Image (cartoon, rainbow, N blue to C red; front, side):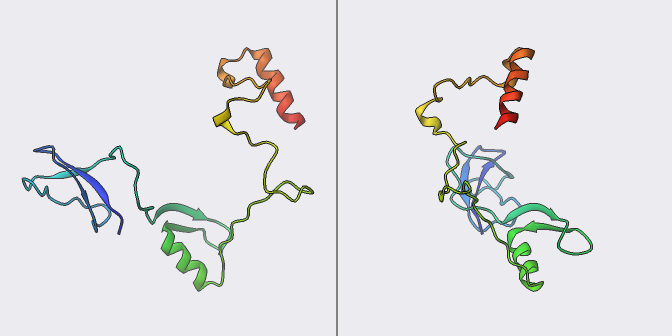
Length: 134
């Protein structure tokens, strides 16, 4: 089971708890008071199994999944296999797209980094025309 960070509502004690059922909150280890889940500043070390996904084209009725394991079991039971493909640029033999940018190096020359909301109506129309030409 994943680990979660809980904070005591009475004494403010913050702790990481393991093997906690989803939707439950353990009592505070310091004072026994009620706790609530919170996001600490550290990154989580476990990716949870929870998802909220509905797939409409597997069976006659749409199938809703609330966990990845539930989805895997359903797909295996019905002979389906989940497949994710990375599509590269056709004809180049590479998986790199010419449309990706290394943002750490800054914007490429000639690229206006302003969002659409900061552009004048004329500039917005010009940008739309440029995008449609790609």
